[in-house]
Image 1 (cartoon, helix red, strand yellow):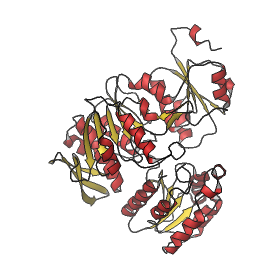
Image 2: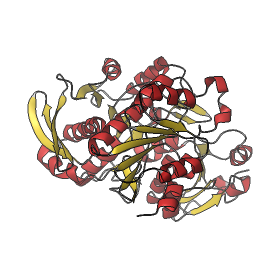
Image 3: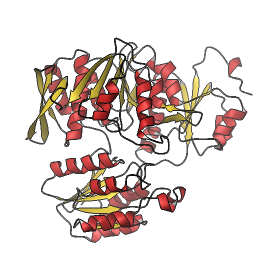
Image 4: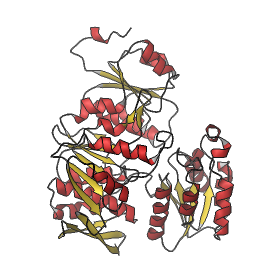
Length: 477
């Protein structure tokens, strides 16, 4: 039996993160440390960058899940959403009647209450947009906090508490909360500003249809107070429809002519995208973004709209935005070798694949683009979006498709048909191949003509160790 009730009331509270290597979980552990909790955690074997993020916490971390990891009898056990019944540590917490919560539940009561949550939601851009927003507000002197679902290049850590009463920027994921709470995570985040970037079908293991996703977003909007804000992308018809369900103040952003925060693309200059933004039909400011792609420009307009809504002058933001460095694995060059660039991006949905390839073409227009795609997400391991995946990959000059993640979990008749994708690409005159062996992919890359290529690795996971194998084989030549 848990003896937490009999512990010394004067000592600091204690918390154990089961699944501490999850991107959001390690950020939650960072917040708990800042708030004065004693923190420990556990997970399976970890790999960069999450292994580095967990190591930087400086807390005791157990490798592997065992009931004995909980023998230190913490006040709370936060259970990550990757864990389920049958996990030895989950079973141990339940058998011992320990106080357990999901990370979103813990965030709601121990972080977000008493702050002003800015919840960045949507199928796409919900990591880059909060990273941009948090950076702008931090540099503008708000003293706020953030939780970014990725490794920001602008902050030492992916999460920070900030001051009580200040804005707190958080990624509002529509994925489910935990094995014992199948609601979307964003239901726990108490949004005072809800920002919605896009709305498409995704997470086929959680949602059965686009209508189910629409309903989740509509219910989330019911939490925004009347004097709060809904900021929605006016370029997305689904978001426009969603905004008719708002109970709060609402404004649109994007390139649509009737958008409240309307951007006009003004071309590239010295590697920067330029955009002029009008606010309610009056020119508000001109800005430069050090990122390629129309989708990233939309993300930037969204972040600027949040900052503008909170009263930050356009002139201040114009000086801050060009300094933004981005998020790891979002168009990140991770290797240069013999005149070739190797770029990593998290894209794992057909739309994200398409716009990322377009952005890479814009950024490196004189290079040959080879897309290396890992079907890993629950959306892309199936045939559901096979035509859309094919069309998205067709924007590259050559395609290499890796092994299907956990292929055995998807019936063969429902599984993405990589041979058919490559055949369809061939009909378009595009060379392509697929392989279940990462070593074969590395060999294919290394034996081709070198120089002038961009190898764009599209994966929301480790791609079977591809990144490390490429670095080992090609070094930093």
